[in-house]
Image (cartoon, rainbow, N blue to C red):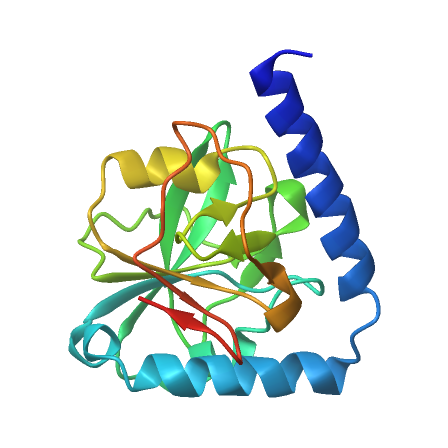
Length: 187
């Protein structure tokens, strides 16, 4: 087995194990961990000074973001990613904005207008993270490609069990600036 195939196989196995662990969490547990994570983020200087934040509209198996988005929608420019082909396209989200189900069953702003302004902070979901600030995503590389042309502060967030000692990475996998779970903060 050559090296890339070994990494691919290891990533696939981590994705499977994390998926099984996510199924064991109650909605209450998910929200409790999200509250702790976002309480930590709100204290960061990067968050306090950020005027624009790219954040994901969480799916049922991700660290919930709906409450934090609603809390800050009138105080900061909230931007959500949408998937178009191989790229992330950014769209502004506003408190009365409608959402539609887009590619990969991700909810996104129902708007034709793309957000073209700067992004100060990116709150990034992942399947797993490690001590070296590596992120394992779902395998399509959307965020990695987006980060190639963007130097915003990147904070990876997830449940405690998504934080592993080490994860396999490719050269093109982009490291986070910080990783935050309920019990871990790696800067």
